Image (cartoon, rainbow, N blue to C red; front, side):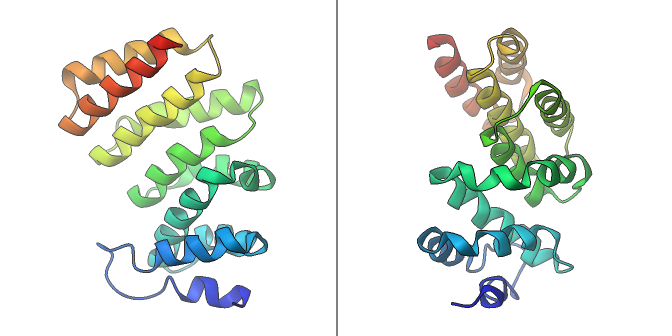
Length: 174
């Protein structure tokens, strides 16, 4: 598969579908050299390619989070600039997979807290996931994140309540 064909597989169809994002994730997972092309898709002029590239990149980096490291600065920047909910919810779980210094972690936390004000319940739910993922490895932010999760169990959407309960169990177990 050529590098250009990977993004071409993400073209077309309807915004309400993931198209062939799962197929692209599987291809890239087997040929990690294609990952840079997939990441480049996050900045495509085509909104369908952007959202599906984010989906596929998120799936690939569940098993290979180290692939994100060379793109840390760009991903943190995109996190603060992205307006599309499909990009935001994938960034909310990808960015916490990065090795972040204190300043970068603060930027990520600030962005995720901003995502909690998004219109999309999915973005809010994944922002909670991202905050909990960061708190898992940073005890200094854990109390604030636990309070945010408790608040979401009381006042969030049904998805936020369910995810927050699971995340609280994980964080409170340490």
